[in-house]
Image (cartoon, rainbow, N blue to C red):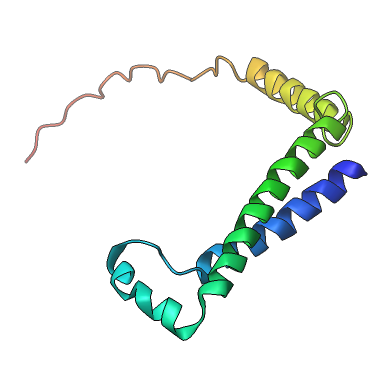
Length: 120
C-alpha cells in the first residue's frame, strides 16, 4: 500500500518538476544577453521561487524513490504474482520449445523423369 502511494506521489512530483523546469528561463546561451531585462522588470524573485521549487521537487522524488524501495517486500512490488507469472511463462515457453525443438521437415523424394518426349 505504501509502495503504491509513493509511486503515485513520484509521478505527480515528476510532472510538476518537468513543468517547473520548462517554465524557467535558460541561464546561458543566447538568452544570457537579455538577462538584464529580468532584473529590470522585477521577475527576479519568481526565478528564485522556481529554482527552489525545482530543487525541492527533485529531492522529494529521490526521497520517495528510496521510501518506495524500502517498502517493497522481498524486492517485488506486487507480492508473488510477478514471480508466479514469470515461472508460468518460462514453463510454457520451455514446453513449447521442447516440442518444437527439432521440427521435422519432409524431404521430397526424387522424381524420376518421365520419358522425355521429343519436341515436334
